[in-house]
Amino acid sequence: VPPHTMFKGIYQLKAGHFLTWKSGEISTHEWWDLDYAAEEKGGSEREWMDRVFETLDRVTEMEMVADVPLGAFLSGGVDSSSIVALMAKHSNQKVSAYTTGISADDLKYDIIPDDVEWSRRVAKLLDLDYHETMLTPDLADLLPKLVRHQEAPIIDMAIPSYLISEQSRQTQTVMLSGMGGDEIFAGYPRQMAMKLAGLTDIVPTAVRRPAMKVIESLAYGGLPGKFTAPLRNLKKFARSAGMDFEERYLGFGTYFTDEMKRGLYTDDLQGEMSGFDAYRYHKEYFKHCAGASPLNRMLYVDFKTFMPALNLDTTDRMSMAANLEVRVPFLNKELVDLSARLPSNLKIKGIKRKYILKKAAERLLPAEVVWRKKAGFGAPIRSWLRGPLMPMVNDLLSEERVRRRGIFDPAAVRNIIDANLSGREDHNLHVFFLLTLELWMQQFLDGRQT
Image (cartoon, rainbow, N blue to C red):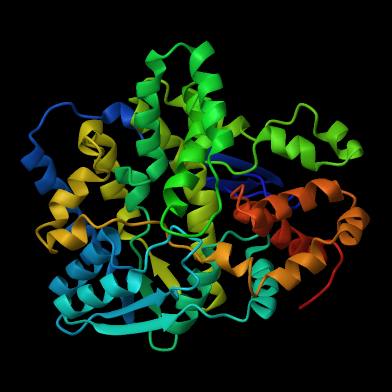
């Protein structure tokens, strides 16, 4: 989380801050912050729909100003499709749009939907200059390269981000992205999970927590098939639903729990990590917006941590690795400020996430596109770990290598890998992180160049 990096003595500038250097002294200052105290309680749904549409329309046109070729990323979801539809509205030529597809075999372990079908529908509807590629990278060569550009272990979205940027750069110089819609309009499943988990608070803690533990222990997390997503989500829900508000949300957003991390570290490292709080900044941000609605408190914490540290940082680094500029209309300051004033009950209404944005988007797109089921932008890591990545895992996370590195207990690492392969647990992203962490250590600690 900013300001920290993977390197001692090297820091990031926090979002919304500027740095000054004077007479050898460096200081940082905040120039802007998201202010949920500005949330407005009045106004009709129609009025807010108009304001959201008009603002998104205006900022998209602003972001299109360029004297070089300009296109857009398209997933077929409401965020990217709305941006592309508005670009088509303001352009006197066909908009170039790019998408990545995933094979059906690679999707059997994942909750990622097949976006290609929907991207094709939108491309036909809007008469786009449409470009499509399937996600079939040479992972053994690609992963070390992406870790070098990220200067940190990578997340799964780094792979399609780089590949689609590389493809787009063949004809475009600037691309517009739908990133940010989930963060400002509440589009993530964990935000809905928090609303559902809140319903369990009527059950006494002494009953609720043991009951959730039982559900977690019974649910399988990583089996293939049509029940993959529901079982995985149920297991993760049960793991965190019994907690209090802040801990619950942090639990929904994490993979390595504190208990799991303690079991991973060697005895020597456990002593060094004693008292370390990985969520120090998250808790400070929760405290900073204590007076906001529960939903806006979650959005604020994500806006300060998850978005800059993961999504935006990954997108910036992977696109620039391909020499491509990416612009994000949803994160234009004018639209972000409007989202802070938007009533919380119009962000999630009933069980409908991003409700007011989707109502506004109905002016641009068919209802089946606007309201379709959508998951995050990522790679089929779960299938790849059982296929092309398995030799790399067995090599780089072997007992001998882990012991020689001296950070993790080799038996604990093996247990995570085995539990994942058995389907009992969904530890795929845990394994992927450990794998790319080892690649990072090889390049930046051992000095290996690839």
